[in-house]
Length: 426
Image (cartoon, rainbow, N blue to C red; front, top):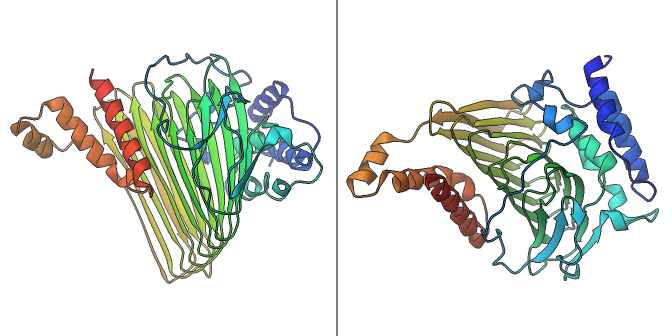
């Protein structure tokens, strides 16, 4: 079917403002991504998976300006021993980054790999391409074609500390496109951390290939610059008895769209994707998840909680697809919102599509206000209304945070949530 003229014009204007990196092993994948992008066009509000989120500011040629947050707050994860890789407005900062040397892993920059042959050649754009079916993800194709940098992480063992990707926002008009590739060999295990606002507008893609018996842990915080806009994509492929666990905390941001596409291809694999979002005022946050079960005895969990007030909007679109032959599938999906006033809204679209008969799949979605009985109980015991509301809010978010396996990371996320709630009361 021919593209609508509005899509053709929007795509042409966006591409005219970009310059594709040339040469090297990624050239063929970039050319293929560009061809696919031109065929599908950038998303519009009429696209089924964008009906709850206006993509206008994510696709327009020039990034809308975003003020830079000035704060004395200690950066998240700063107290941990980690290998730091820093990007400022999408540009690698060597001076602020650590040496890439770490046992059990090799790390390179995408911008530095200009050779004709590289291990990432078999992965760059591959999982993103597979993730376009059955839903087109044009912003991910745009990323594969035009990403200016990123990291290529090949995990061969069990590194002694996490790899920390730090994104800093300095320019009010920055427009960053980063693409990361992570390959986790059989039996290996790695933790990747991400934090920071990245840019005025940020388009990021991460492709993760997890071999048999391997484990990938991912904890991300997005914020706290309020005027920033972001579209992120994570594509993961799981082998036999492998583990994928990802958690995202989002605080503030006028527009955030996080997509996660996971395919369980090996028996006895486990995938968890979870998130906690806190929005106040002009805040729109969209989690769109698609998990495909294509193997026997696999488990997946989707756990998303959003706290919204002062007219904030939360969106959840989550799907579990169980293919023929994927027996003994256990798929769990829950999306809930806590609306702290009558002006905020939560839009949810949970989906199950099952073609196997021996499965246990469930989904649920609810919206509600603070439990008045619980609030009365706390206040009757001397807890002021503000702190009491915060305690109940943290309790509501706890199920999502508990999906983080590392207790120290879970504790830090909880502390950040408590600090955000406390600031909003002051």
